[in-house]
Amino acid sequence: QKCELMSSIEWFDLRSRRKRQISEEPKKESSLIYTVCVGMKKKNSVGMVMVDISLLSGLIPNIKDLEHNVKGSEKYNDHYEIHHNKVYLYFAKITETECLQFGADQVVPMGLVQPASAVIYDYYSPEKRCGIFYTAPQKSPMISKLCDGDVCKCAEGGCPKLKVTFSKDIESKTRSRYACYSPTVDYVYVIKILNSSSDEVFMHYTALITDVLQTGMDSGIKEDVTRQMILRLSCDGLELNIEAQYLIMGQNNAISVRNNDGQHFR
Image (cartoon, rainbow, N blue to C red; front, top):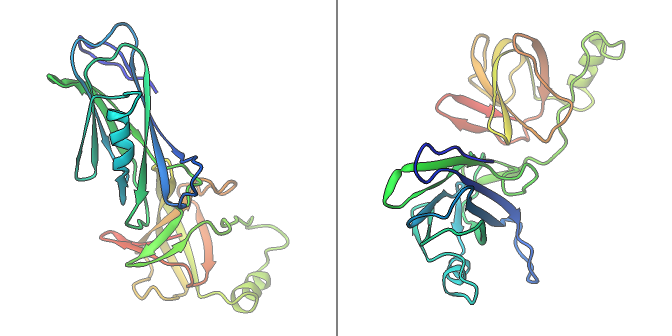
């Protein structure tokens, strides 16, 4: 991604990517790596440049890696600082595109990892800046969890499948057998999709409950309330249409994530 700067710094190219750490030592599934590349398109920087990286929720940076980038035999940047969940990288001067890496470990399990920002700017004129948003890889085990308090469940199970309403195989008795006998279904709702949005990791749908055929464990479920439905973008072949109605059913073994707006369920 390239950023357009309306300043004397002119054009920066900042790419902040995250890759699974590749090392001779075995790494935990929650151990990831940041690869940060920064450069100028037209000329060298005239002063100190700083990169402000907001880490994804629940991550802490690897201090050893940051120290190596500053003090190692191949010096990649001149200084670094850590403040709260941010890493600041200082470059005295940029003469060409530079790339560096540092690890980050997940210390707090998070249900839904939201996108974070990476910003590059002139240290002495911080209003001259360029930024991008980034997120975790779609297939990362770190983000493939749904949590309720301190209990988490992997969300990398099978994806929901959409059945055609007027298929000969989906008659009334077929739905009844599925809901009641094979397998047992805990909740059955009819919903109407009101809107949708994407955060590059999950698709979020706002659904209006139009009929409750079986309540399940959601004691607050009733007609005319809304619920947030969350679907992994890595699930292909399932796209819910705005204003369309769907019959959904499932079991209570999936962990729900609650917030102030209602209940999230996958």
